[in-house]
Image 1 (tube, one colour):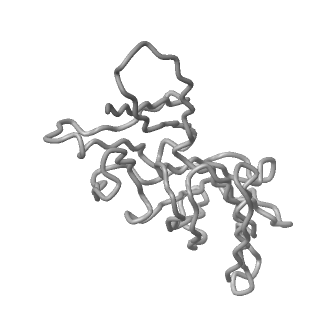
Image 2 (cartoon, rainbow, N blue to C red; image 1 turned 45 degrees about the vertical axis):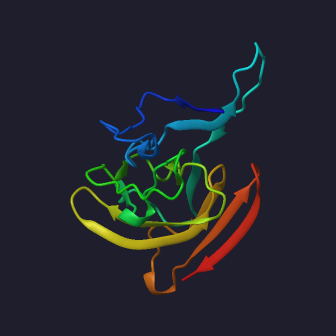
Amino acid sequence: MYYTVMLHNQGDDKLLFPTSLKDKTELYATIPFNQRVTQPFGVLDSFEVKEPTKKTITLSRLYSLITLDFTDLRDLSIVKTIKIKPPAHSLYAWTPLNPSYDQKLSGIKNEAIISHDFNVHPEVTFSHFLGLQENEVPVEYVVEIWDESKLLRSFQLKSAIKNDVKLKFIGELYPLDNSNSHYEVMLDKNWKGAKIVEFK
């Protein structure tokens, strides 16, 4: 029996692999979080060498698509930049030949910076690399709202998802009264189902 790992990445950003391997079980792939528009796909497949054969192999998404949908009625011209920072425990690598292998992702850029007109485009979308997950895994983001030079607001968002899922957080980006602000987390699985999580 032979095993093959196939990977395909749509986008200009590159997948990260180990620089050296002592054993095949140490193989992993991941993408830095700051590369927020990349679309990696992968599959682990097996085959036997007996005779010529033809086989169709389907690669699955190794990421989920995260959207922050802002519902503010106020002018957001003051907001110039949004920084999204997942804690280390929300960064994942795919270890196809050893699912229990705990790959520590140190030294990987884990901050996405988004700057555009949030009045015209009141949302932010980014990819989060998760690998292939049989069960939901926790994801968490620290979101910082900045003007030209000053931090206006910081808050956390949490949920749990598998790969190949669309997760949407809905709420006010820069509410007039932060004490009454809340976000609603909607897991839109048009790819694979639906889920809603509310928090304050």
